[in-house]
Image (cartoon, rainbow, N blue to C red):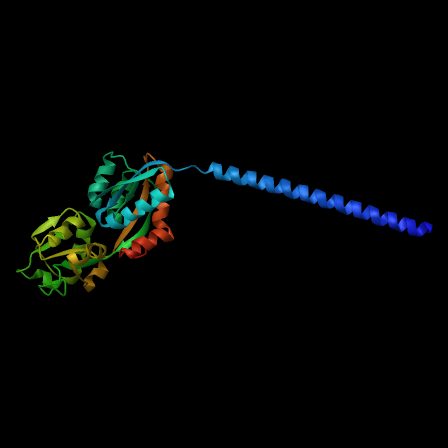
Length: 275
């Protein structure tokens, strides 16, 4: 074998050894990088606080069905948490919050009642509108009195119930009546929309002006009648974290669920409109 051929073989062997060494270094580097990445991921995961404890939500009565469903979803997503609700008229809830009642989240049926809380400095940040709601007439099943308009409710032979004007459903009804130039004297004013609806369900009233969501939730216990004036009295629903929330992290997560695509599906399925 000539000297030049032997040199060529040595060069090839050297190249193979060098190549193998480089491959080994690359493999070690990849393992190290993967290990670092896994370590970083574990660190990032461990840095996210695990939610636990009770979340207290004060919410407008008309949110009862949809928020109850979302509360159950939240508890499944975050084992170790418990969502408790106080459903009532928004004005009553706002007064309780400003009076010092402990709560984490407030979801109101109108910006006006939310302003009671924000003006008192009891909200953390700016409230966000998450849904809208529109009025509808609830009549006895099958609509035996043939109610077809808001004007029909002014018939003296009908027993009609309205929400008190201090609560959002009553303020919206007043706005719709003013827009149509009608005067209506109800047999009673109720402190929240569920109470007004119950009067019809129990057949203690012939009709009530409530929200579309409440008519839908009642199923065959009532019959709903749309009226055009309701378009002039649509309510925005704002939600906020409260300043002195006992469980801030979980409260923020619940609000995010409400605003998420999943939360919106539940709410629109209940008859609410997107903002």
